[in-house]
Length: 157
Image 1: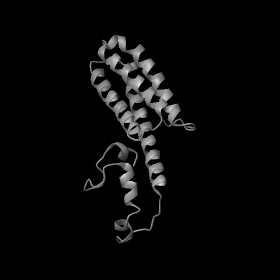
Image 2: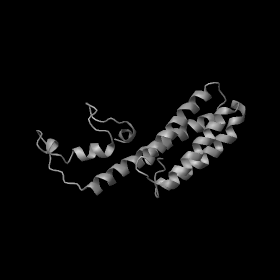
Image 3: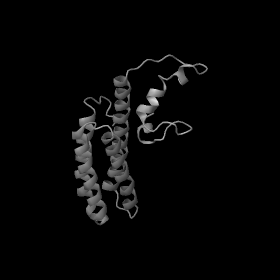
Image 4: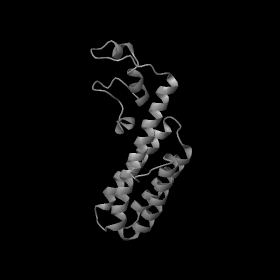
């Protein structure tokens, strides 16, 4: 479910273009009248809220993955770090895209955009010079995480 927000088209037949469209399907006559179907009633506001929730969770998962990669690059010198940063930059962009699509949390988007620029700067530098840039990117990722989640008691993101 967490990855669904940035993996459109959705369902086995690619019938739904957004996570909100997928949530809305579960309120449709098609779902209601299917074998074992349920009568789920949601307003458009509730559908949008569930979609926003899933989008924020998706952005949080992307941040978690980017942090993991960034920490590796910060602590290990390797020719492969350029490729790791390429993936981290793409995941940062995924988080930005999923939030931007519904204009969610402009502050977190700013933090993510700054983290992305910092990761790109790190990638453009020799591997030996990257740790300082990565440390800066990690600060921006932490800010984005804090902007998305007001409480994280188990520090899972």
